[in-house]
Length: 150
Image (tube, rainbow, N blue to C red; front, top):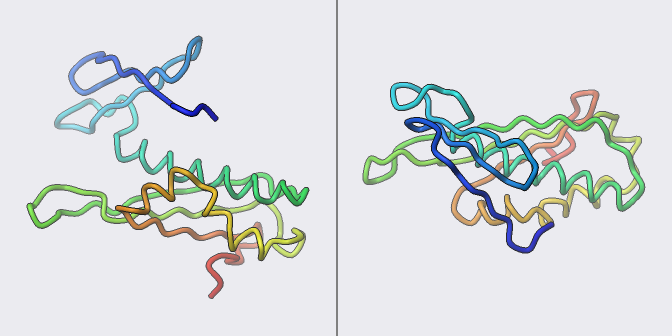
């Protein structure tokens, strides 16, 4: 991973921005929903939760692969709770990330150890969690909750 990740945003119209994240890559687009924008791209909140969810998914995959385990395919769903703060400003109050691995949990070696530490390796969620609570669940292909343990 680059030591100094960067992006460049170029306004297309109103609240729609082209987001350039690398040379020779097609941009992705951000926009606000109506009435401000035209919903022609992901919202800033969606980009934030996508970053958190992507990093957590990567961290879980990396931790399992260290033990030569194959949990694929991984499917992750993320959402956030938006509400008003004391100044009546909209804020993200919490992020919820649900990671589903593509195999039964008991088929993976060292799973308990991996689940106990994979979040610690996630740069994005660990940083965001300093100001916004990030709640993570992991389930297996049989819909059994693996993390947190009930």
